[in-house]
Length: 96
Image (cartoon, rainbow, N blue to C red; front, side, top):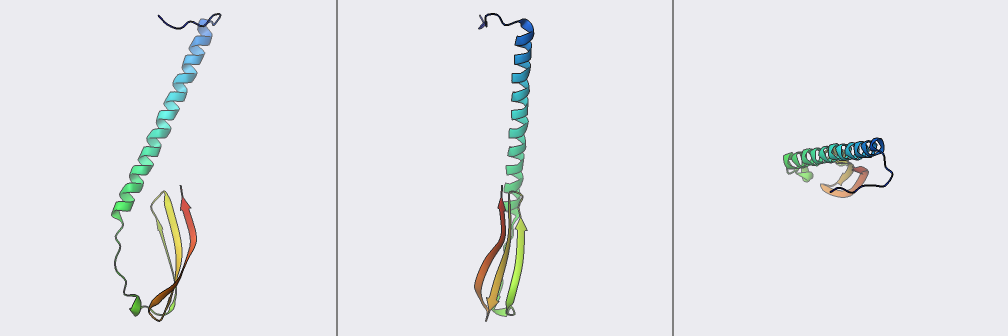
């Protein structure tokens, strides 16, 4: 037994079913793309290699660095004076 809507023609039923099917397909594609994006993001995070830097050997100055892992992009400016970090400024931070 199915739910029958009084006065609904067969053509209207087909249109409604088609719309619902299209919405479900689009939702499935969007969820799939989101899962792929998150998976790629996780892989990029796992591949980051952080090395030690001997700050005492750096010349005084302002150094700029950036990194992009897909969902997050950061650009920072680091000021070094007398072998110490004295200031860090985030120039750009995007997350999505």
